[in-house]
Length: 118
Ligand code: 5GP
Ligand code: ZN
Image (tube, rainbow, N blue to C red; front, side, top):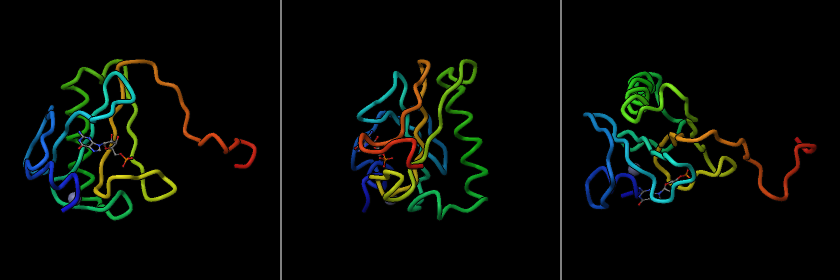
């Protein structure tokens, strides 16, 4: 069972902020912003590349609800999903990072990369 399936099953504890039949939102264990929430489907889906439009439709509404619940809807937030190896995905279960609570910087390249090479 993958790490987030264990969180769904309650085998690994999580600090949940919102949940419904299909999705869970919980605090990231290693936050990189004042607010850092992970949003996952309860069903195991590997990543964004394998999600269906039907599930994404419901997930979109759920993410919007989480943003409202945490009062991020007014000042804004960043929504990120890391897909696969080059995307930096470590947990092999679809998740969105909802980041907010401060004006965020935009840094996504590794130290050895340069903008020129893109
Ligand atoms: P990825 O790098 O796959 O996009 O993000 C995985 C995220 O899961 C990381 O931000 C990491 O801090 C978080 N994470 C890993 N294990 C756990 C855990 O057991 N509990 C929680 N709440 N977050 C976790
Ligand atoms: Zn899983």
